[in-house]
Each structure stands twice: as structure tokens, then as C-alpha cells.
Image 1 (spheres, rainbow, N blue to C red):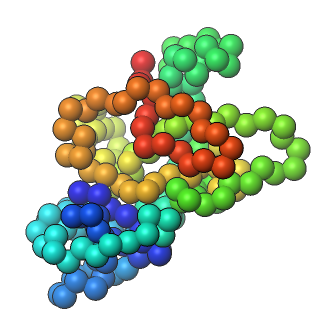
Image 2 (image 1 turned 90 degrees about the vertical axis):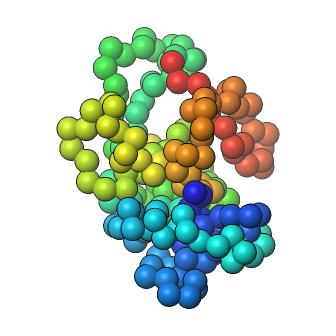
Length: 194
């Protein structure tokens, strides 16, 4: 399943179109894309039963950030060997974890402006994991059951969808993405984790 925010409304992408969650007859869910995670198990059952015939065409540029108001945002630093080498930094023995502010969240087609001062920023492709329910002391083996997907304003764009693990049947990532040319959009791929 692919959950999206279309014009700021929760939508499921299917059959080359989108199904507005709140307009499906009898839907128990609102149009708020962030509210879906509060009852993820029920939403997943409901969404899996949707009739693809309800999907209507949409403009891709109408896709917004699929989780626009996360309560917490954690990031991992130097989690790719190539990135550490590129930065001239040693590969850390332990994960480097840091937080980001909610204001850093942006959608896949939002303009990300350089603030005054910095002369260089890194372009990176990241995998976003959205935790659909509270998790504490979760083992590596138990982590998949909890998954759905730098803190300057709009410096954490993601989307266009939140894709459930079944959308990645072989669990392999594509080859590294080329850096975009000025004005281009991020490609749909991820660097291989090492």
C-alpha cells in the first residue's frame, strides 16, 4: 500500500490514481494524513479492502509530505560508508543519532531555500521510516512490525508516499542515485546501506 497526502488530504495510491480516504462511503477515517498512524492496524485492514475502481487520476505535483506533523524526528549520521569517506570522517563504531525539528519537514515538491550564510550543503537521499505505533526496546527482528518510514526549515523533504514493506518484496535497494542537476527533483531510489 502507498499512503500519500494529496492536496494535504490522506489518500491511498492505487491503479494509476488516488483514493481520497475521507470521501470513501462509510470511511471511518478523516482527511488528516497524520491521523492515520494513530490507528494504523485498523487503517491497514480498511485500506487493503479498498476497491481500486475508486482511484481517480491526479497531478503528481499535488503530492505533499505524507507525514506532515511527526511528533519526533530522529536521523542517523554517517550511516553510509561512502558518505563517511566523502566527508573524510572515520566510520563510527556506534550509530550517530540526532534529532530534527518538525519545521525541517517538507514535501517532495516543496522549494528548499538556502538560508543566508551557508555556502555549501550536502545533497543526500535518505530512507524515511515512519513508526506507526509506540515502540520501546524493540529488537532488530521485531522492528518490521512497527514500520509504515538537519533542522533548517524544509531541509528534510520526503515523499511522495509512505510505502508499506510489502511494496519492496525483494528488500533490495537500487544503485546509488546520481546527484540532481540544478532545478531537478530527487529520484526515487536509495543508496545501499553498508
